[in-house]
Length: 134
Length: 152
Image (cartoon, rainbow over all chains, first blue to last red; front, side, top):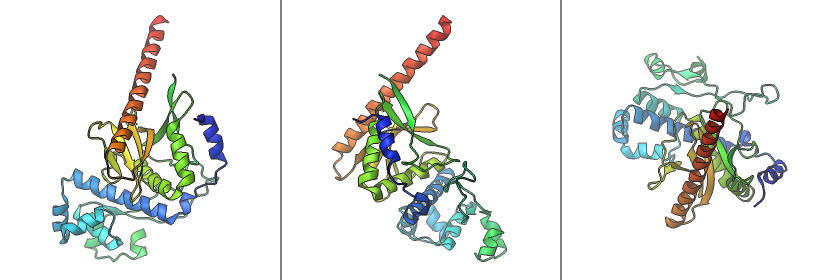
């Protein structure tokens, strides 16, 4: 078996994976994080799939499809889930920060805008970009 | 025998500045089997490698162990062993939590190509064995440090 040093030298010669520009990878991470967040809140609030489905007025199968990442979620449905779980909804797109300029940051650093769901609903705002950045 | 952990090389894992968890690789006597296995996967099956990596990135960002059982499985016979899985991929990465409960020490990988449990169980057992080696080494080092302290 090669030593760690030899493996690291070999690794240095391989091209970068360029994950920050790989939509499939970013999407996989984003969906997984979202599902994990939903599962965490469901556990914290002691809500099962059936109860969440009832709160949303949907079937248990709908929730199951979401948690199995089989459903292609819209911002609208995500906001409804967040509100049903009495939780805030966060989403953001931001420019990449040059690694040379800010070495502590990476393309996976989080920079979020927090939108309390209840504020959005009570003022009956729609989900246009202006409201989201407010 | 020298047992230690090494950080995930940047070419294998993206640099994440604000993660709660951290992954490290187990190394025994200057050789890391898990590093070699991950490099092979990266070279031979980049698609599956990225899928597995996605799960690890999700774990780094989470402040508890992943709840989604499609991505993280804990052994029934050995609950200390964590089996990280990819979404719709066959590769698994085994590891365990370090003493600070923040570092996940990776031990070995496994390519699940069959529904039969025998090979998967063997991979769990292998991880368990490597964890014991690590634990006893850490304990021995701690005892030695304590003895040296009292001698001085």
